[in-house]
Image (cartoon, rainbow, N blue to C red; front, side):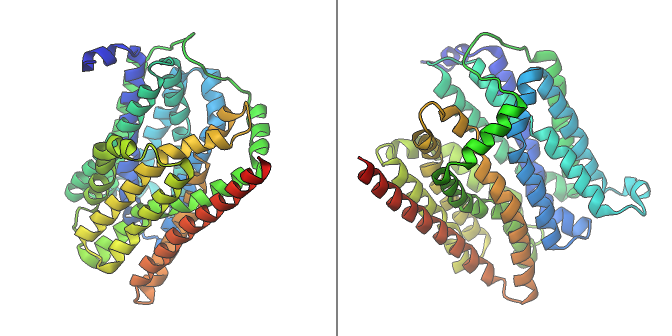
Length: 419
């Protein structure tokens, strides 16, 4: 099948939505990679304060879509995109404006911390509509034959955005400053607002999509929380994402403070991480397709933990890049199987409900891991022992792998006893 053949298998709206997602991810990862350095070096906050603010913003970005999906269903995806890109563009601009000399007089005398927090909350609210609208569009513009390919294309384009965003961020901050990275993110979102207004067309009557009320969403939350085994799994899995997000918390600080303040840490993170996934996701999936689901998850945990072992041996640009590649390999082994396992653990008839909470571990990791990373870096730096960070993060990674192995052991034993 040629490229033009499978391109025509999808409705034009599918490509519009995924193109907008690429630019939204470009905007998100571009600003995220410079956030910690920008908030400390330009706005004057401590590493701990920066970590707390990052955790609130990142946690809400991944938690709010559970409820925002209800409004996206009610409004229609086109309107949801309009709301999302308008608020995102405004929010990113406001965050960047706090560090721009042109707006110094506007914010003079106002509490910077609370201003930044309010801008982050606004931006997170806008961003919460993106994933429900994009994933919903993929669902209604694909059928049983094209659905798997449709979500694969979506995931691939997300990683393209995750690679391009930080790359552009480096070029912008190197020439103009970190605050102008937020201007680029804002312009990217406003451009997608224009694309949405003129090119996005609602598609009805295709695919399968369930519309639920806000009350139903809240009741579903308690159903999921009531599944003890599932919640233990999600809490353990959140340790994995705590490790990942330190690429945006600890790594930028360490490179700029201890290696080279002008080093392109944005490119190191994005090309080693997202670049590896873009190149090797399909081959690794084929190599590990026969590995049992739970084994693949534990294996992915263990390999991803090597990120801090490799970096801790001799912290440098090459070892940091190698560590990030190691994490990406672990992610490629276990991430696709994660969704498969959720479908297995869900009670009969509730697979869709449980998949809706697949992003919950990332939200937990952001709420907890970002402040922890900021505090850990600040404390280690103040003590003059930055190498402590690597040992602590190795401990988190090993704990995650061991706890997942223990979880699998008891689950398998209970399954054998039940059978």
